[in-house]
Length: 246
Image (cartoon, rainbow, N blue to C red; front, top):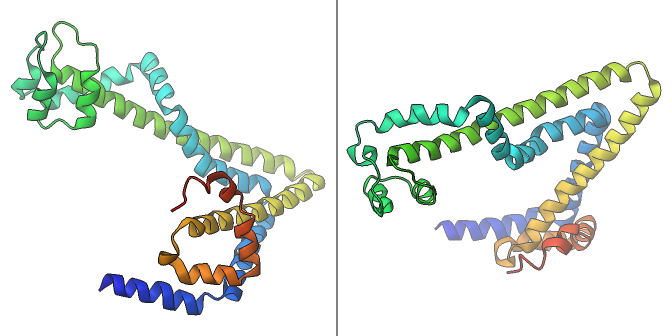
């Protein structure tokens, strides 16, 4: 039943409603809308929003592990978190006894339902005399939590820096007509490029999906002058097209 309804919607509704002219109109409206937002808010405000959102997330992903190591060296974050976590295992005899030489720690953790991603890390750790599985597991979980804390701190810090930069620029901009004009012009260009990028990504995703899934939309794009041009000249087709062919 679901397959039937899916087929009716994809082939009939999209095929009849999403004609080439409608697709063109949607593309133009989206690009124009983002261009006007760029004009209204200015280049700096748009950049701050992008950096404060997507870019801050990417930077946090890249540097969160290194930053967690810095926090650990300065404040002992990992040890502090691990110490608190170890208390969770205080009543587990199997995890609190010292690890014997040659003991199959993997089997013990499996019996105690320790998640596989934690047990794999534990098995690769350097086990010292007197260590217990609760010690090692706590260190691993503490490391993950420390990375998560570092990730959040980085995102918040980057966003605060962006807000501060925007505030300082606006104070300077108010005293210069040239800066106001340049900010608006660059904002228009940024908004236009942002719209083109979003549309290009959408057409790329649609283009690599099989015709059996989106036949109606594929037909509408073929009938649309703007959409067909953006599909044929799509930079993502050049970069990823060969990797995502069905």
